[in-house]
Length: 450
Image (tube, rainbow, N blue to C red; front, side, top):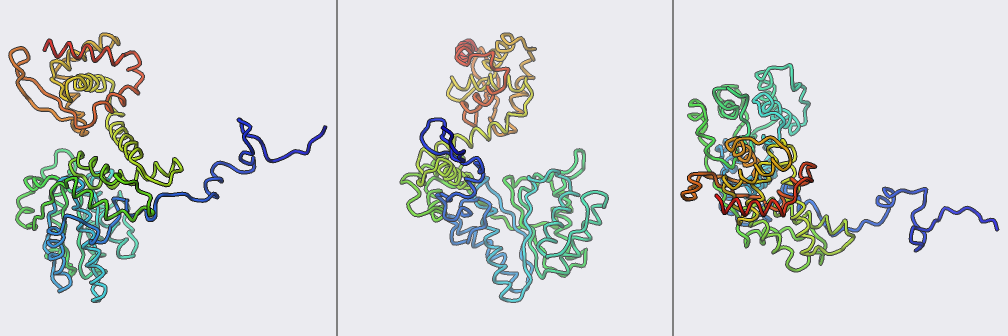
């Protein structure tokens, strides 16, 4: 019997009609009904400038920033500010929220005020020339004019001139928010860091560049000691008002997250989710930015699963993914010898409550190299390789004394979960030759012998 051809087809299990051959999985997603746990996802984007009323636990800092910016509304230059404290404690968030509010009031008073924010850590080059170009580009964007200066082929002085022309012509008052300023180190071998020269120019712009605009700076840093490297002339002209930001505790993080609960649809957050996210955030040194991102990621996982409620399981999965991705980013580009050294340290720490004494680490490293037919480097080199991982934030090290046998040695303490470090390293084909249970046994023996 002949049958007419049909566009409908059975799926592999014979359970009914599947997707039409004229459509695609992309079409089905784009054309289908959108299911999401979010009502306003921007509220759980840590880069969103939220209203100051949503900010919790920073009343003192908000008040200090508001008092400083208040001068703008009176036609006076605001004082330079130095915001310092650990990552994720609200430094960028508060000052942008206040600046946004001041801009609104200034507009009502017919004052042309704005702020230009640049994070120097995210720039591909940490030279003064690139910093000035970036500031010019962002300032021109705020002014609504073209930034017609190429990145290369034009001197830094010419970039400064064009920047200050735009500032003078388009603003009554302007604040430069210089985030992660200590990353602006400049070229190796220069007498002073690039941020010192930038701060000198910005602090003297009104006096020396004949700019009528009220120009001030807000410097944001995790390391207030960066001032120790300022050139003497910069130090004498740059005198900011310091505002300190301390870590958030779990209780404060709960309140911070609760103030963004309306990012989700009503009933889309299971009881306990906010508290669990806050607990993870507290473990990460009270970093509110990470906590907010973790809450968003948990919502994304719920969406991908087609579920309408974010559960604690989604939070655990999001945290595991964040940790693994962070570790992968840190160790993925290491050379093989650095990976072998870090792997030995991680396995020793795994069987020793997170701490890895260097003699035991080296004993395991040497055994691993012999079993995989790799060159064995000196203990000094291995220690140096492991310390390099410290610059990625994977671990910390300190010199300590472990008794008569070990004498003075290094003790490595992991700041990232050891299991995640081991799992990430084992994705390298080299570690196919190794059995982690055997490595743990050797590590235990090395600890007893050291």
